[in-house]
Length: 301
Ligand code: PPE
Image (cartoon, rainbow, N blue to C red; front, top):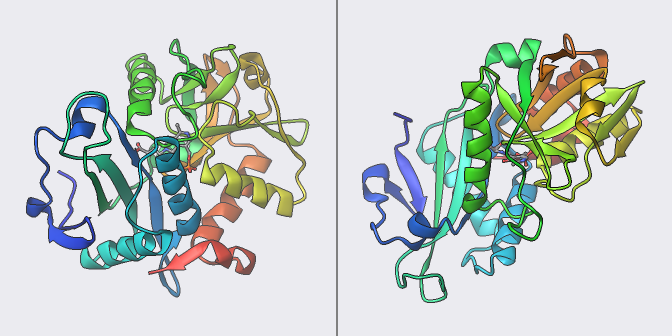
């Protein structure tokens, strides 16, 4: 079981045993909750939350899309994350704020339900495995499509969006792959079950348009790093066969960090290439506070 001692629940720290919810919690029935996934890393100046402001802004934006009003400000939420990390005695961890409709109404109109806010933390290693980080993972184009942009709001990190990812992930894993790459309803590449995707061809770095993807904060970090390295980068409509013939492919997300892709649908991409390795190297230094220009991304606990 994941170790978690203290939870920030509606503004106060409580023990995990006391962070209980009722069986009639609205979100449990209808999936209407917004959340974030953030990492806190050990640096030589202490633990730091990576891009806490951007993640918190996205949490507030997700809530705005769902018309949920979070009763805490960006500052209060970030302070809550820091308090939870300290209370659990962790130097390095994953941070999960979750805002959900609690009690007060059943049925599809949630307006009478109260809004609850929780922050949890736990240690989390390499999401797609240590070997995956070093040598690359094997991916499958999913038979499940990413949501149509007018069916589910892909800019919201909404709990109810994730059964789509879970269907894709289960299919990929049961077929023997590590991760699923999802196409949108036009048949174009969007993102993975829990990561954005990049590929390299002839020295240029590409990533699909934002249209049907979650606007990943790691995606944004990768783009900033690439720009600073002088690598030319394009956001473009992408077909699956462009991935098959790419020189390099990698996935990125808070949990997966930067994970190279070695194979897609049995087409070999190969060992992690020079651009992937360079971006990975800079990213891993940036999160640990080893590059002055990216210190702005660190929120010290
Ligand atoms: N797309 C999706 C669908 C997604 O879930 C994530 C994060 C991303 C892109 C990348 O976003 P960002 O973390 O801001 O770079 N996925 C979370 C999945 C973890 C989980 O299993 O839960 C994450 O990486 O935290």
